[in-house]
Length: 267
Image (cartoon, rainbow, N blue to C red; front, side, top):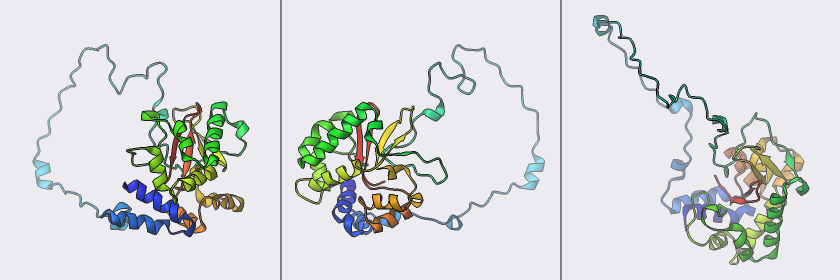
C-alpha cells in the first residue's frame, strides 16, 4: 500500500472511534517516517535569526565612488518587454490563473464565506445529472457501478492526493473497512447528501463541492451545522480538524460541465 492509502484507509476503518490522528502517525511510523518531521511546528522565537554582516567602516570610506555610465538604449523590437507588455486581448488576468490545488480546503478566517446550498434543483443540469448518477451507484452497493463515472486516463476522477497506480476500484476497496467496498460507498453517499458550495465562479477553477464544510472554517459552525458534520465524522475528529485548521475528511468536486473531478480525503 502507498502512504496515501495507509493514511486514508486507517481513517476510514476507525473513523467512528476518533483515533484517526494516532492511526495516521502509526501509519507514518510503519514507513519509517517521523510524524514530527512531517508536521513540524516552530515558534517564531525558535527560528534562529541570521546576524547581519557589518560592513567595515574603514573599507567603506576608502572605496572610490565614480558615476555610473548612462544606460545603453537598444532599438525597439517587435516583442514587448515582460515588464512593460500589456496582456493579450482575451487573456486571463494574473489573479484568475489557477494557483491552488482544488482538492485542498481554502478556509481562511475573515474571508467572505460561500453560500451553503441544499437544493439540488439549483445545480446546473450537468452537475445535477452527475450527482444523481454517483448517488445511484453508491446506493446500489456494487462498487463496480462507479467505474464508468470515474473514467480513465488524465480525465479520471482523482481518488488520491499522492497519485494512483493500478485499478481505481481496487484502490477504493483497500480504503474501505470491508472486503467489497460498501463502507466507502456509504461514505460517498453521506458526503453527497450533505449541503454543498459553489466555489470560484466564472474562473477556470469553478467547482461544486460536497460537503460544504470543505470551504467553511470549522470554528464558525453553529449547533445545527455541527450536527450535520457529525453525520460524517466524530466529535473527536472535529476537535482534531479544528486544531489542523480545516475539514480534511472525504469531499467530492464536480465541474459545471458535469465532470466528477475528485473524491479524496486528507491534506
